[in-house]
Image 1: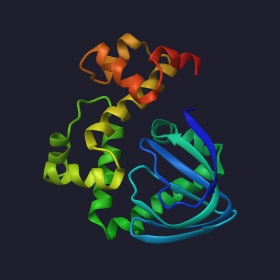
Image 2: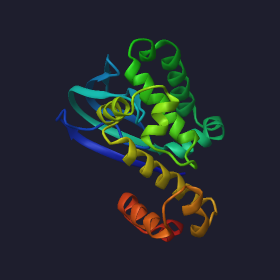
Image 3: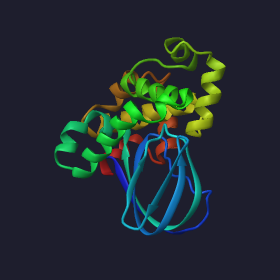
Length: 215
C-alpha cells in the first residue's frame, strides 16, 4: 500500500498544513491539544483523540500545541481497495462511516463550495484514466470554469490542473506497482508523451518511475 507514517513533534504554529493533496490524512494526537475549523465547523481534540482530513476539505488551525502522528494513505488505495482494507481495519471502517455521515448530515447541506470540490475530486478519481481539464469538469457540474478554478485552489491549495496531473501520477505509480508496464501506463493515463510523463513523475514523486519497483 502507498502510505506514509510521520510523527510531527512540538507543533505550535497554526501555519501547519493538515491536508495533503491526493492523500487521506489520519491524525492521532499523542500529546497536547488541537482546535481547528474544518469545513466551517469547529473541532477540538486532546491527547488520545483521532481525526482525519481528506484532501478536498478546507481546514484552518485555530490553535495547536501538540505532537501529532500522521498516517497518510494514497487516494488510490483508499478508494479502490477500501472494502478489502476496511475488513482488516477498525480505524478505516470508522473513518469511512464518519465520511458517509458527513455526506448526509454535515457541511454539504451548509456550504455549496465544499460539496462541489468534494464531488469534483471524486469525479477525478473515478475518471482518472480519462482526458481531464477544468472546462470539461466545469460543464459536467454546471458551473463556470473560472469559478471552479478559483474555488478549487482556495480549498485544496493547488490549482485544478496541478491536482489532475499529480493524481494521474499517484494513480499511475500504483498501476506500476500492480504490474503494469511503463510503456502502457503513460498512454493509459493520457500524458502527452512518454518524456512528459517521466518529467512529471520525477517532479512530483522525486524519483524516476522505474525506481518504484525498489520502493
